[in-house]
Image (tube, rainbow, N blue to C red; front, side):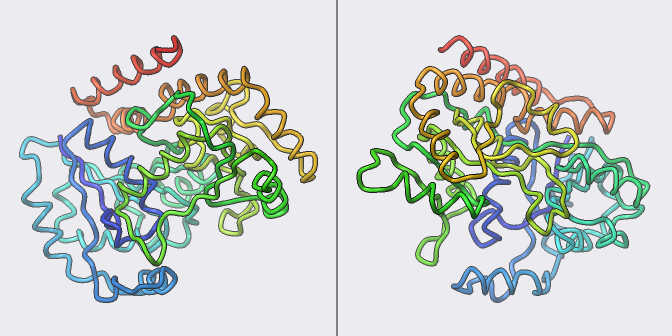
Length: 363
């Protein structure tokens, strides 16, 4: 069995968000023979400004796919199956599958993995009739894809390499950790309160890639999880207010990251389809009041409750191992395709169970 993943480069020249997908690749590669099909670089990828790079990336040509096709042909498992997974955060990610059109029939199974909010009508011409299965990170979006394309779609909740990056360590010098999306009304007063000179607290707003430093996706993710793993509380806010989500409220990647790291998650609970079932343990997310003063009081109370912090640290890390590791998603994918689970995946699932038991027992 061989899995090929078509995506952006993970070496730091691709989009900054590739850091959260590196652990998906790492966990899959730990489970089965896997090859990354990084879209060929094009002139301009060395632009210094992140905004300039993003604009260029959205509109630049893909370049010659010949090298990519040679890579596939050299790496095919002669005994099969050979599975192609196209990671898609936007139409452009779907369009670049055209690079593989001349050898499309060499893949025994083709999977489109929708990992951000892409409306089906934006890419129907590139999807209908091409794929055997669609996976969707959003429980409300998958049925729309299935209805529009006629291709089966399954709910594929966000996940990470919990086995490789979980921690239940009690060493938590950071009180509050924030990555990316935030509630604008709460952010400034809460951040200023907990970083006031006499507060005795530490609130960290995480930024990795800057104009002065460029990390690979792997390095970026290591830094991210190091921050989570040293924090007591992590902010996670549901995403329906973001225009691109069109009022959908899915679980997103930051939840598995925070759970795996043993953080108490605070913010606002997503309301989308499938979220309740994926987060049905006590205090998976603790919702904050909308008023800053009340939110600050709630946070202070949580930070002062050592027993509660310990209980959630152990429980969240355990649940991430049992439910939200990439290996669980890969097993589901192979089951849906009617394919056997390779020995490496079976071993990984056993290691997840052992790690979860170790966290539960405090080992």
